[in-house]
Length: 348
Image (tube, rainbow, N blue to C red; front, side):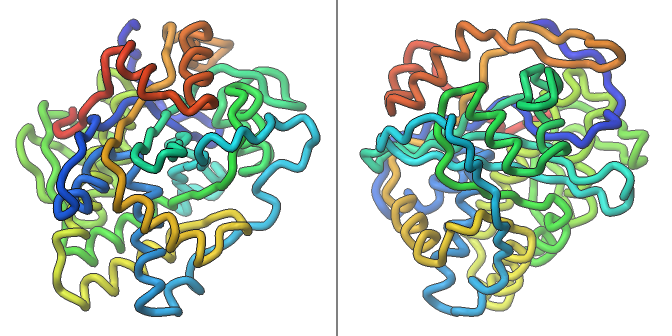
């Protein structure tokens, strides 16, 4: 794939990204809890929900803070059939950009999290936010535009049409909540490989280990200007930050910090109306027994221009192979053939 040219923020609300974590081997149970959240950055979003689910057993009020949205799942009769082979979550990282109200809600990270029927594998399939795809009722556009046009319902319908994968649940994390989450834990540490400057937020990032407070973390995950591959590099940053955030949460033993962190997470999370406290508790229990975590990117053909927009053209042949593997709950075979998944322990 060709490198992405430097990009300016799009006028349309944004969404996903590509790249991902490493495949975790089966480990003793005392290590699984840490690997569960460190295995891949994208999975950390849904795994933060698992933290909430586990916390519910300790304090009922946490569950009441999780926002639930009605009508997030499509009701059209042409949805893909439920195969019963695992469970699929539509997961987005949403940058609401309250400081720029005219831009509306953004879906800056978009992924399908597949929980294998066997219970031993979690696979995160990232879809680039600028993927040029058909959107029901709106022609062909960037996939993030579906979220702008019709919220989670249209986004899920678009993803189901693209992939043939039935989505069981929806979850979103507001990136604005990163400030409170990060500060609740006393900051997080990430590794940056190259010096870079973000003119939009006037941040100079030096290569090496960086300890981020909440505001720094938010700027870190928002930058794409001056990153060589634009959005594709920004998704790596988001994954690296989520790994660091989840790992710090697991290592924290201070009960006051833990409480503040969980409250910050629940305040930033939105799920579909069918996700109950019981759903979250079961998710937490299931994830503690997972042996393999992997992050897979939807295959990309090349960057391109459509009118005045910079877009990503998917490799539809290879993508179809990936989506079939998810539907048939055999993504492990796909990962083995394609050379495995990627780590994001150090990013630009």
